[in-house]
Image (cartoon, rainbow, N blue to C red; front, side, top):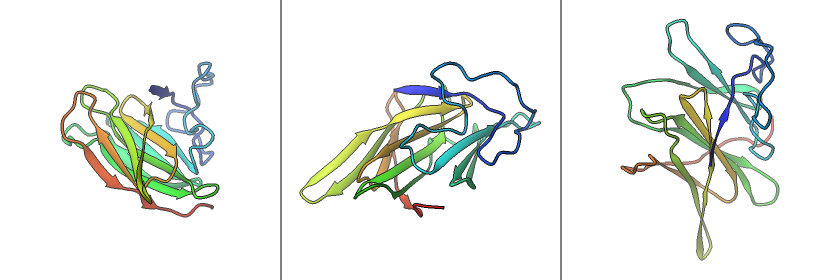
Length: 167
């Protein structure tokens, strides 16, 4: 499933975004930018435009800037990063992010893990940000992520980087 996160003039750190506030409300059912659904963990995102026409997505964890992904045409890589942090019980919040494909299609994202006597996997919901980037999340005992272009091709894999659970 793919959905779109619209741009908002109120990023997670509370300072106005470039270009000022639009004042337009978010469409019904859409998430305001910076907000991920409840249960997505301590992360939020913000898209920014540049005067030179290069878009970027900022990733925040507990309100602190963690990563910046810049739109690029020269790299074929879809997957930029992946993290996990503790959740209730033995579960984890997991997050992966990256750039959209050259044709603008969102990749297929699968979180995987191993438990005694069995493997676990979950296909994640992918949200596009500013028409150039994507974010996917899940909750579960996962330790890696696999990302693949919807038309097939080589899959990209990363282990999930562990981060602290509270600010």
